[in-house]
Amino acid sequence: MNAGSCASLACVATVAIMGTAHACNEGDGCWTPESEAAALALLRDPGVREIALGGAGVAGATGPAAAWYNPALPVWQTGRASVGATGYRVLPSYGLDDLWYAYPSASFTAGPGRVSLSVAYLGTGDQYRTDEYGTILGTFHTYTAVASAGYAMKISDKVSVGVTAKWFRDHLVDTGQGHGAHQPTGSGFAFDAGVAYRPWRQLTLGVALRDYGPDIRYVDALQTATLPVRVSFGTDLRAVSTTHHRLTLAADAYKPLAQDSRRAWYLAPIRGWYDENLYKVDEVDDGHGGITRIERRSTLRAEARQIDAHAGAEYAYRERVMLRGGFYRDWDGGRRWFTYGAGVCLPVWKTAIAMDVSRIQSIGGESRWDPNDGRWSWSLGMSL
Image (cartoon, rainbow, N blue to C red):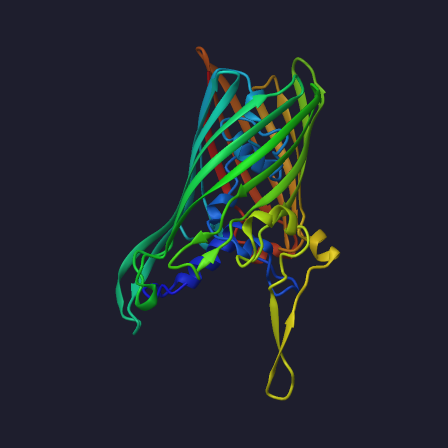
């Protein structure tokens, strides 16, 4: 993007990608499908419980943030309404206090189904504004904001469906210069759709397509970016369920479908399975002072490496105290996380107050560079 007034715009984009998508260090040129996408606040996990479960939630997410994982899930919740809020620092290991994420949300019964509302805000800090000579002219604030509204309903005793509509604003720079004199800010919309199937009370299966929508246009029609469209499949099993004890096991498989913005965006759910890197080109020194351009095409192995695994377990004592642990593996991004957390649910008059906390711990050599290492997340919620 021609946003000449931002000396550190490239740094902002890199930090955003590293914090929300993949900070790879493997031999694929450090490219992942998510690195093609913009509006990366859409990728942030808002469920503190689900973060502690390794990010697994497409079949069993609970609370007012459940619709983010699967729009079909809220209708399975008990109670007339619930509200909550999540917050955390985005890159704790970098010491950047002005990068933070907030997610207030609400869910309530309406007719035969349930409505979900939320706002996500990713503040990516203050940046210096410069002219074409590098002179500092001031500062500006970059952010991405997303407003969502969804509806879920049961179509049978065992199956529910849901859809969520999103509007977002990706504000990179206040003003540009030269060809980029227009404001380099992109706005757009996207949709989520999901299905939840509960063959019996202890088991739920889920699938969700998220952030499906047209490309974002920034300065002009030539400067667009794709959305981080993706699909997730998951299962949630109550392995133990007694009066005082519950043990839940959850697992998800996540496949990014984002592709180059020169492709038709509406075909991403199809083409995203086999040709994300159709347009990726490696430039290799030919040893004679020239450059050889090699087009990279997808292979079955490369596609398989794009599938991330999420798994976790939750133990609950009388649905008042919860202990959680999980594991997350991202092969093409080179990340491995051990996640853990806890929660309490306290009855207060006719309501229930829930407080949750989770932490991400990178394992292996990744902890040296993973910006998410040591990240704490907190949430507070209330149900009626």
